[in-house]
Image 1 (tube, rainbow, N blue to C red):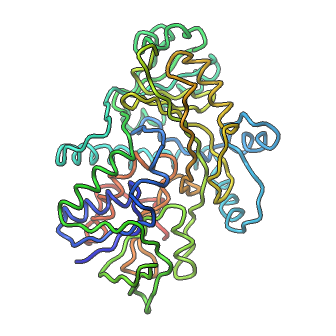
Image 2: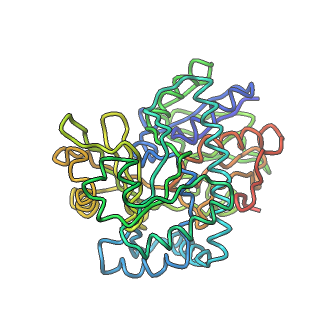
Image 3: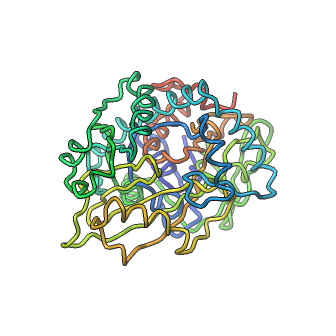
Length: 414
């Protein structure tokens, strides 16, 4: 079967690889000059089933409300007129109950754990290099109150088999000596020893090379303009380089998926939430961290990727707007310098902002709709890197007519 994959981020490339492994002919289309130049370019670098919490929670509406007059909130709400934004936001608010948050977190964790296993298989099969470190991730808290609440919240994942160690500030400093000078600012933390870090863009580019070597076609610099349907089937994809046809199609365009789909099918509940990252060089005089971590009180994540420190923060509900300026990074930079003053060279930052394709629930859409040969693999949100390989395997199984290895409750349009 010939399958056309739309989108050259980590979701599209992993899907193309899995389909080739299943014996299909594969063509992938990406509008940018290379793969991984969109949301996959400079994310947190964390493969983190141990942090698979749903953003929609009982605390989220208060944080969003405070963000209207404060610039130091982890979630930031921006009013704009897009009807799709309001439709998405109302559904997000409906998910902000304790019961829904727990259920969505369990579903996310199931996919994240499955996906990490598939990632390890792909690495063993291909030998791709991407600054992969399987040294666990640390989730630390600044105050005793938030630490105790964090331990309680982590029970959701612990009950699903997630390995966790509860650490004191002294144990944290022993785990990562870079935190020793500042340990008095930390109340305690949870260490997830099975979590990992790695450069998503480096992985995606390397795997694209494998896809090409296996006979897959990767067409970059090609923009999809519209979909052509006939009855209950998709019959062609129109691009600025001509019409493309296949037996089956995969929609893996992240935030652009619902815009391209339009009225051809049900509403795809995927909307952009902007995240910010800065990448800092690590030199010989820096006391760089050896373990990736999340400052839970400020929701700032950092990962060491070779000789770079990647720092990410903030969820900005700002629509289809990836613009940024140095001032947007001032709060996260200040808070990072507070906890890791010598962790990297803060005078040479590389700034970036990307648009996460979020669903209100935090789980992706992996399904078909009215068009039975169009398969959705989109909406992976802030843990798209963690979910990517598992979502690709699920999509491969759906196209083959096989039952996926995990249940897809909450991840379909039905």
